[in-house]
Length: 106
Image (cartoon, rainbow, N blue to C red):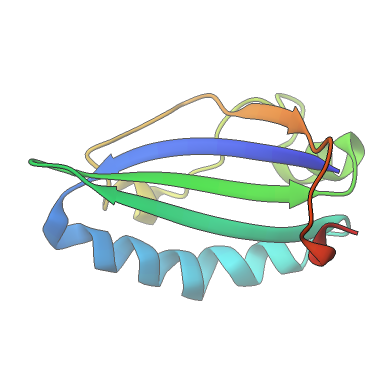
């Protein structure tokens, strides 16, 4: 299993709209890809912003390639999502899941 990690920042006002976008637009898209396992969105309120971490889990590198395209480390951010964010990482990081007690990982 491969974990794909991406981070972004938004305003306190827009954070709810981003989470709604993720639930209504991103999740249905992810679920259409073979090899997609699960995702989690973590938020951390700070003084002037809300930090967002998006973790998606994939069965293989080839599943990530099907989702991300030829530049597998490029962030996949729709224009409507970008409009809700004040800043976001243009590159993602990948980690091999070495151990977990989460049964949904396989």
